[in-house]
Length: 148
Image (cartoon, rainbow, N blue to C red; front, side):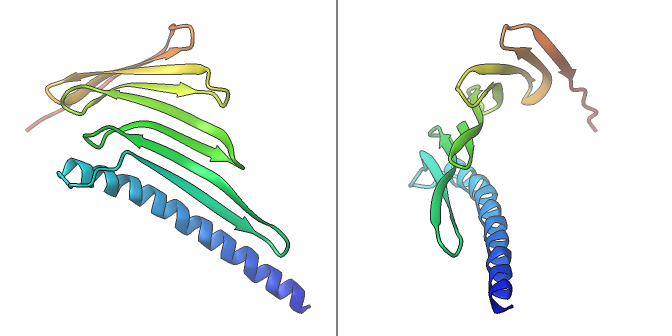
């Protein structure tokens, strides 16, 4: 009976730890980008997040994610992992004002599966076109703004 209670506490602790790590990762990405854009002396080039899982017998460490930045704090590449294998992979491009103008999505083997291109007018996104791997249009969004 005691073994079951201890095992339950370990499972609960691992879920809590995982939730905390995900929260830290998300907040870290935002804070890092803000830090780099605010002119901080130490600019971050990349972040690698490792997750450690353990049970009563085994301790394993997996790479959870990789994020790479340019010198302006923009995210250039994001890779997330599941059980140490690539799960999601994106690359981004920006214009001189820091607006995202291109997003590429890759499958776990590294093959390009989708490209999104963004058109910016006066600092506002006005259009998003999504292409498949063969450069055929999959979808198009038009953004309309109302101003005061």
